Length: 145
Length: 274
Image 1: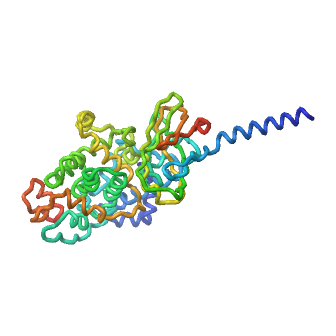
Image 2 (image 1 turned 90 degrees about the horizontal axis):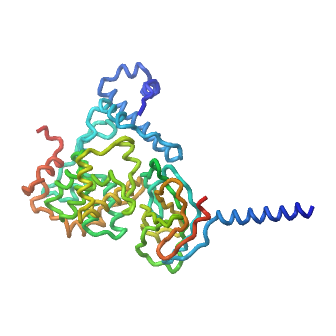
Image 3 (image 1 turned 180 degrees about the horizontal axis):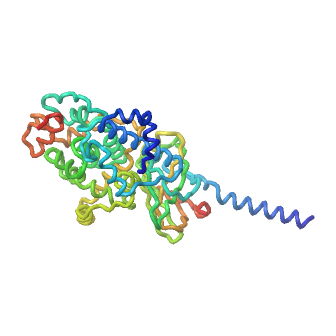
């Protein structure tokens, strides 16, 4: 009975750790924007939309040997936000190679809260470990399963 | 694109209705049907279903289904195979803004492109190039980079003309560092197995080592993100940039004896038979 109880506790603990690892990263504040990374997906096609997103209809398409790693990031405009130009965020893979996205920040303060999808074309099988937006770097290795 | 013959005939009201149509009406109906099918494919794709892109051969097979050529400028063809509309005449001493209003309209794509360039802090030469980069599609479509640069060259900064001329070439070559992806719309309109011709490849080689490489590249970056059907844009925010960088001829565009004056006159009077 005690053995079963301990096993149950162990499994619950493992599940809790595993789930925590796959949920959004802790938010950080950058240029008056609260930023958190929600998830990473691999997609065959992904809309090329700015951040905050509009309804642009052009897509990026996976090519043989490549993958589109799509990093979904949540943004919240904080009271101290001041409009500024922001550089495109980068993603770093486990082999330390840095990847650029074509998704650009445009009018970041125009909507109070929004999610953006940043597309990174990476060689198939690449795992991302960090995501950097301006001065903030997020550890995203646990999200890229 | 494969056409389901039965579904196509049914969509026109059956075999009797088709028999009553003349050849031109049939060709127009087929074009319309194919465009609708394409729209449906795109819509399905946006819903997550994989889209099957056509091959170069499939696109070539569509040539004889149309009463016009794909490269025909916008002012010379009707929308969706319909008859063309009578155009409002150009005013005397027409300005660039007059052409935007009466010949390039709605110009939504170039206005979106220039708006994005402005919001992302690009130079005025690049904003102007974005604003003008596809206007010549009203006149002619193949090699629109070269035609477009020629149309505007007498009136705009050299860098803007360079950017317009070569954005066409760079559209075929992704540059992830600069933020340019190869767009799915090119798989759709050129075919997924399309290879750019040798002169485009040679031009790309030249551009890669050119000190102004980034000028046309930035036009392509903004080009990519300027197909938003819901974007609200206007030419007003560009009035000052046009005023500073576009040398408006006092005689009006088309009548200043510039090397491209005849192109402006053709745009002004596309119904002239000769």
